[in-house]
Image (cartoon, helix red, strand yellow):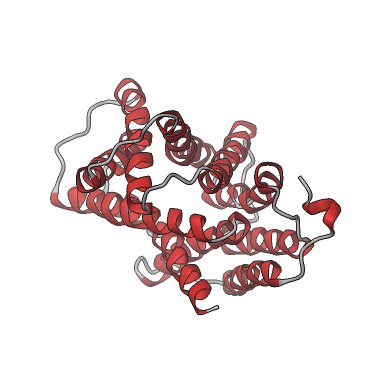
Amino acid sequence: MTTRNTDLLLTAIAPAIWGSTYIVTTEFLPAGYPLTVAMLRALPAGLLLLLLVRQFPQGIWWARVLVLGALNFSVFWWLLFVAAYRLPGGVAATVGAIQPLIVILLARALLGSPIRPLSIVAALAGMAGVALLILTPHAALDPIGIAAGLAGAVSMAAGTVLSRRWQPPVTPLTFTAWQLTAGGLLLLPVALLQEPSLPSLTMPNLLGLAWLGLIGAALTYILWFRGIARLEPSVVSPLGFLSPMTAVILGWSVLGQSLSAAQILGMVVVLGSVRLSQRAQQAKPAPARLATA
C-alpha cells in the first residue's frame, strides 16, 4: 500500500504542475502563438531527454511512438487550443473533464479492464467539481469548440490507455523522450505553416518556455508515464482533475482573482472524486461477464 500511495502522489504531481500552464502562458509568453508554443514546449524537452538517454526506438516502436506522440501531444494540444479559442475557459475545461469516463471505456475495450460503477460515479463527480470550479452562468457554447474539446479528450484518453498497453522495455525517462520528440516533430511543420515567426524573446518569455518545457513537459510526463505503467489508467486519469483546481488556486493566490464559495465546493468535490476513484480500484472486481474480454 505504501508503494501504491507513493506512485499516486508522484503521478499527481504532473497534473498539479500542469495547472500552472495558464498563468505561465498569460503572464510570461507572447500571445497568439499557441502551436509554436506547444511545439517549443515538446520538441526541445524531448530532444534534451533523448540526448540524455541516447536510445532510439526499435522496430514496431517507431510507429507506436509516432501514434502516442500524436495522441498525447500533437493532436491533443492542437484540439485543446481550438477549444480554448472558441469556448470560454470554464466550458473548455468542463468538456475536457469527460476524459476519465472515456478512459474507463477504452480500458475496457483495449485492456479488458473491468468497469466499476464506483469509477463511473467518481468520474461524474469530478466533472461536476470542475464545472463548479470554473464554469460561469453566462458561458457560450460553440459547436466546433465543443467538438474539439470532446475530440481532444478522446485523443488523450486513447494516448493514456495505449501508453499502458504498449509498454516498451525501457525506462519512463526514455519513453517520455520518444513521445515528446515525436509530438514536437509532428507539431513543427504545422506551427511553421500556420503561425508567423515569434518576436524577439524577452527573459520572461525564455523563463516561461523553460518552465513549460523542462518542468511542465519533461518532468511531469516522466512522472505521468511512470504512473501509467504502474497503475490502472482509470486510477491515473482522474488525477487530471487536479489541474484546473491548481489553476484556480494560482489565479487566486498569485493574480488576486476572486475565490467563490462554489469554487471552494468544487475543490472539495474534485478531491472527493479523486479519492473515490482510488477506492473504486480497491473494491471487489466487477462480475466476470464484465471483466471477460
